[in-house]
Each structure stands twice: as C-alpha cells, then as structure tokens.
Amino acid sequence: MTGRGFKPLSLDEIQVFEAAAKDATNPIRTLTARLLLHTGMRNGEFNHMRPWWVLEKNGKYRIDIPRREDCVGGAGPAGFGNQNHFNLNDRGEPCSKCRNKSHREDNRWTCKTRSSDRTIPINSKQEDLVDLLKWWKNGYDYMPLSHRSVNYHLKQLADAAGLNRKVTAHDLRHTHGTMLARMDWTAVQIMDRLGHGSIQMPRKYITYTAQASRDLVEKKYNLDSL
View 1 (cartoon, rainbow, N blue to C red):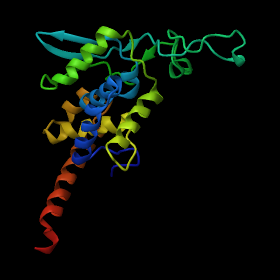
View 2 (view 1 turned 90 degrees about the vertical axis):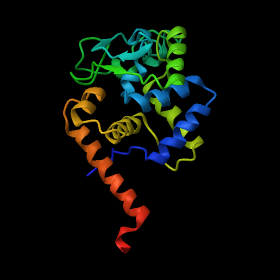
View 3 (view 1 turned 135 degrees about the vertical axis):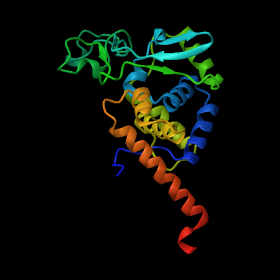
View 4 (view 1 turned 180 degrees about the vertical axis):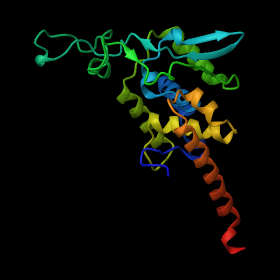
C-alpha cells in the first residue's frame, strides 16, 4: 500500500529526531530539520528558499513559495577540467540541478507542480522555529545548502537520535503529511498545504495514519488474545 519511497517517521521517531535537531550546535542543521518537519517543504523548495519568501504580518509568519526563483546555489562556472581556474567556491551560479534541466528555458529554479506555489503558515506556537527563521532571514541571502547537503544534515541528526534508519527530506515531507492526517486534516487541506498535484498522496497519508492507529491499539491491548 505504501511503496518503497514512503517512509514517514513514527511518533516515537519524530520525538527523538526533533530532540536531536534542537540539541544540534549548528543552527542551519536545526533549521533544516525543523522547518522540513513542520512545513513539509520539498528539498528543492527548501534549498532554493530566499529571505523574501519569509513574510510576517501581525506577528504571524508564513512562507510564500513562488512559481520561479533565481538560483544562486551553485559553486561557480566549471567544466573542461576548469582550465580557466575558476574559484569553485564562488556562489551566484545556478546549482547543478537547475543547470542540467534540458526542458527549461533558463537556469532559474521552477517549483515542481502548478500547485506548488503556495503559502505555508508557520505555527506561532513554534517560537524557537520562528526565531531560527528570523535569524536566517536577517543573515543570509540564500539557503547555503545543496540538495545533497540537506540530506547529509538529516542523516547526521538521525544518527545522533539513535534512529536505525536513514532520514531524508522526502521522509520528512511524508512525515508532515501524516502529522496533518493525525490532526484530522482533510485530503484537500493536506494537498493544498503540501502543494500536491493530485489528491492521491494526501489520501495515502490518511489511510496510513488510520492503519497505524489501529496497529498501535492492537499492540497495546493484544486484541488477538481477547
């Protein structure tokens, strides 16, 4: 029912993973894990996020994901053995993913589906997450992480949490979907928040969460022995 790529964290795993994220000494690592867990952003959305995506009104914060954005996450011009001796640590060039999309007219980042340009409210109760967002917004012009390095930071946190599994940005996206399902969000509401192009995956979150709840009850009360 779930498929190989569907690996949301369990409730226990969420608790220890988030605790490890809060304990991390690298604020970018903490921001990465907590924002992905509590927004369900895609990896590509997160690592292309710019300060002007983060907006505030009446003390409430939100992330506005645009349809397109200039990509500055690359490491400078390269190729042909770097004969011109470019500084490969320079920023400002598009990342490899944006450079290598043959169907695009330019090197700008484009969100995945027509439903992906959306507004994601940040829960005002997550005060420490809001503080991290403000810290990043005031100190950075871009998210200083590549697609690969996002998952590297998440792997480090999974190891620190003692989880016997790999954790990726996609896993946290699925986890956020199941968190919404546990709060009785409808499939349409989940689809809107996560920017899905169809309702199939939101329905899977709801079905998965209902089955996980039944399994937990059966395990707790050992219903087969009654």
